Length: 452
Image 1 (tube, rainbow, N blue to C red):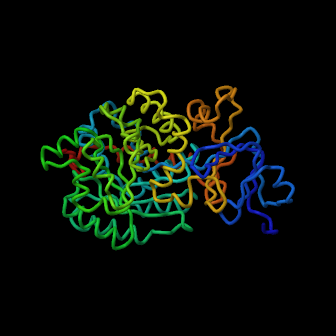
Image 2 (cartoon, rainbow, N blue to C red; image 1 turned 90 degrees about the vertical axis):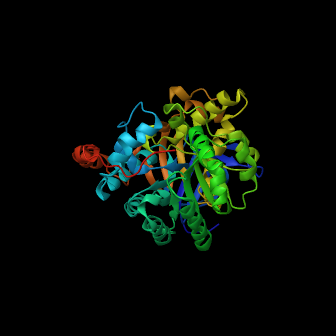
């Protein structure tokens, strides 16, 4: 162990760890030593004290649990500006009558303010990394760099934008890859198989392989899309992606509630690394008949990460809630109270989410050598006591508001519920001034047509 002081020492907490079989375990009265943005050691507080480890910053975390920071594997962060604007509508009307007309008004300033508000919401809720799929992503990248969070960013495009949409997405991905001290990773971001042509999908797959870039796309979002695709092309959306070569790339599929049995062998023989992001709150809200088939996907070894989608559909960027809902909805859908357990839900929220965004080797667990993305959760409140089963308490009793401290790359972004890198009141004031222009739909334009 180095004799210069560590950057951060967290003591007295219970820490969630993964064993060599990836089972979740909890170590009591632990100490975490952080140096140069990485976790140097995780051990008993007594043994760390015995080494006389000094640190520039010390957090006494008694009564708290240290978890790997949560990952929001699919969202549209700037859409928090539209939170609650399009309510109680079917998917098609939601897109065509409200969201896509309003998005045609978006300026870079709106995107910046939305991204700031979203990052503040996520940091306060223990999310240390998010995968974003949106427009004006240079602006989002600047906010990420400034506020200290980690992000996996892709500039979304539709084929209706012509070839420059795809080119812009690639230029963004290459320009920002590895920026913000390595906290930003990037992806190509075609919107969906129903808004991007087969030719554009095939070109995207080639670009991804040529440049070593992953792809983040919406696909088989719901059963209607799968049925329509079968009627029009004789192929499911997953088969469309396969035919275009996307399953040979590192692919993150958003939602996948329309994945059906005939898709499973296609996914199983994919030569790339495929992952799926599930955002269950939105599926309930849109009254979609199915949810992401996590059990079937896990049987194929496909990681399923947790997500919220954008706050325009989900009203929230609370991955903590996604974790609880995923467990509950899986039990209900499978008709089996033994699936999905609290421990499994924590696995999805940590390692599987890290894998889904291509960061399975650097985040997702608290272990030596990993990036120090750590959250401290306070379990002293009446709603989290007594603790009979710590995993169940975390998933089903704790709330995102119980996160006291959020650390990314060893830097404290929130301490004792106080945000240290973002000024929320200023953002809310400025956004409020811009809302009338933002929500105007009198122009009759929309950026795209939802027709599946």
